[in-house]
Length: 395
Image (spheres, rainbow, N blue to C red):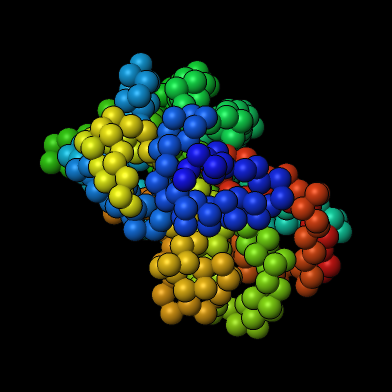
């Protein structure tokens, strides 16, 4: 049956309509299949996606094992680490990256957001991503880690280069090698910062990671660098794309925006529904540790497999009115922040940034008009959302 089906995702230049339709067809006709172009297996139904994300006995998170020379980038990267090492890493990191550390960022997040809005105070139209949703989380995380302001522009350039590699091609061996090449400069900077904080600790997360200890165990420099790199890249992209997607959802469902303006208590349900309806990251990668059966299909041992979280969040068989943006769901089943041991450590920060930024935006602008799809630019692979979003506003 899969021979007549396109196994490679369509482009999202239309804003995602074709991709959502393709995912719907794949859930129905080819819920587990091998991409003819890349040779990577893909999983689309919610039950199968949840199993791939949660079953650490059958699926390894260390996707870099496919390229052994890249193993150094997995050490300390919690998302690429399996038990029991994952448990140790998460426990130590959690002593430094605590809920209090996140809560204490609130005043600074407000200051940064206010300064960004001030920069566009005289503009009737501007790019929402480039002027607000991208710099806000990037500046917050850079400051959290202790990266000097003089280096922010350079860090942004390196992170954008890594993202560009990710969206320009399939997740295959060449992709992983490209990420490795670009990542060496990025990680090299963070390694120097880590060594500096070992010698002269300051009031920042990099210093706390360097000093964190549980049962006599500490993080190595390599582990600190890879965790900090993950937090910087994935952390700022999650909030960037989430905030952009929020305006796209309001464009499609203006009544949701009207309700939120009149009832601020709906803010968290709005955020959760944005994360479900337009999940910022479309897939998670795993490698099969044994032969595994999913939806009556056997996936052999040692295979790269992509579990489509965006598809799972839209699975009409398990999510009521899955293709409707509904901010009044009794329970929101989204898995955009992961599931099981790999639930995103940065999720509280992403929620906090959104809970601060969205009300500030709505207070600043009495009207927000999002342009047509032809005026926007979208990420093409792995990330589902706008990287350019022109808007017109009224105060």
